[in-house]
Amino acid sequence: MRFVEKAHSFISKHLSIGDVCIDATAGNGHDSLFMAKLVTCEGSLFSFDIQAEALTETKKLLTDNNCMRQAKLIHDCHSRMKNSLNPDLMGKIKVVAFNLGYLPSGNHKVITKKDTTIKAITEIYDWIDKNGVISVVAYRGHYGGIQETNAIQKLVETKNYYYLREENESKPQSPVFFKIYKSKRTD
Ligand code: SAH
Image (tube, rainbow, N blue to C red):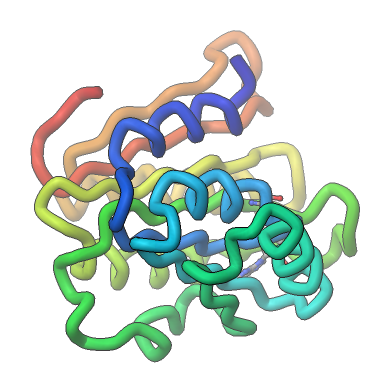
């Protein structure tokens, strides 16, 4: 299974109709669409990206699939996510998805960065539901990717988050999938 599929399988176990969720890296919108379908128009999805082009693609995909009603697209860095969230949502977010790195079809120079990624994960952790999860697919093949992945590992260890780490042990450059839980769960 590819890492994106692993992430979808994880997300689908934790998201239901009416839930609130976040796509922290909207990109072409595939993760946003996947989550928007699970929560339906009874729930809500907030999708962030620093590239306007990415949000244009995401909006198109969600519109074509009749999923814009539950979605709010926000052109901002995910380290500032909380500025766009109503304080009522504190403790109510079920899933936050990060698919790090760059957009394969876009500008490869626009990549997620260690410091903003760490700030984003740390801050949004306080907003997730007691059974909520954060899904992070980190890539080690691009410039700064190893440092970013190591920083996430250090974060989950120092903060004592419950987490599971998956990777292809035989390939040091393979992506790393972090499943981060608010409460101790292993599914
Ligand atoms: N989930 C996407 C792929 C994401 S690619 C999909 O399914 O298609 C990573 C995305 O993160 C890119 O679109 C890039 O613009 C965005 N990005 C990079 N740094 C960011 C930041 N600091 N805040 C929000 N988005 C960021």
